[in-house]
Length: 192
Ligand code: IMP
Image 1 (cartoon, helix red, strand yellow):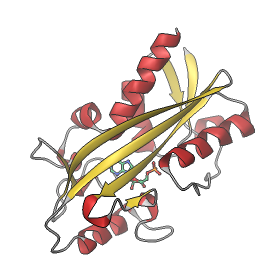
Image 2 (cartoon, rainbow, N blue to C red):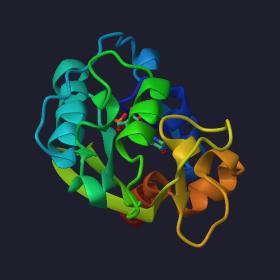
Image 3 (cartoon, helix red, strand yellow):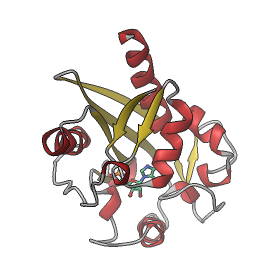
């Protein structure tokens, strides 16, 4: 089976994309011997996805894809966006971010938010981008303990549960990353 590198150390993400991408063996950064943290200092999700995919291409000469995700909260004018991972400060935990979001959103009625993922693929000397997005709302407290990141406080539109209360296959079906990954899969299938 052809190998495809996913430029991530995040085991949750790897598991999610592996369950969607069939026909390729998706390998993470540690499996190609890359232990470095890639510095994500782009100004957009697209920039950061490109930085990660280009890092693998330049350092390891391997075809690769990378994703970057942002949580965009309407009442915060789209923040934290590209700073989603570091919302509560450099080196913060998922829990720190969740706690900060609940604190910042206290008393705010408009709780509309969306997750947006951009995937950058470097393949056969060319570069491609795919995007996925899911609309929802920030809950007023934590619900569920599955998933990662902001999952316990993000409830997608049309559902009564947060991402952290859902089975992983349900989350993958509707999530930002699921949508972007399926676009990537369609593209890869079209290349065969
Ligand atoms: P990354 O830079 O793409 O790894 O994502 C930035 C941050 O967004 C992560 O540190 C997580 O806190 C959050 N995040 C990304 N994807 C998800 C998700 O599917 N659910 C909840 N939080 C996520």
